[in-house]
Image (cartoon, rainbow, N blue to C red; front, side):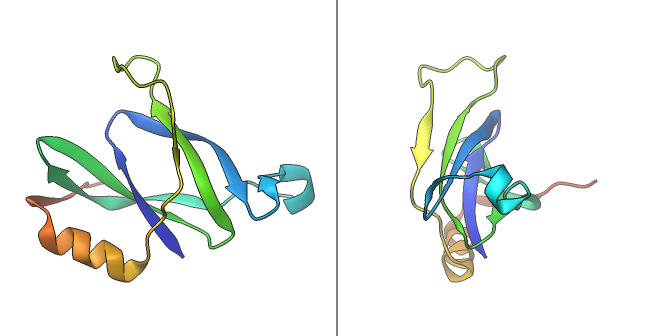
Length: 100
């Protein structure tokens, strides 16, 4: 599995795999992208942890429609390993857990 942190108020859009954009017809399913209940606070910004399957190599992320941002969209090319997540959590200003 791979992981990424996503700013609160942002969402993901298009997803890429090794062959290009994720093709639901070819894969016969959506990509596995799972929000986890853990996040961090860094520089007064809340970042939530997501888990993605290994086939995913890039994601498009963008602010939700009602969020004000000067950034329209970003392509997230650097997904991280579980070991890297531990390093980020270790160095975070604060770790948060979202209760369901």
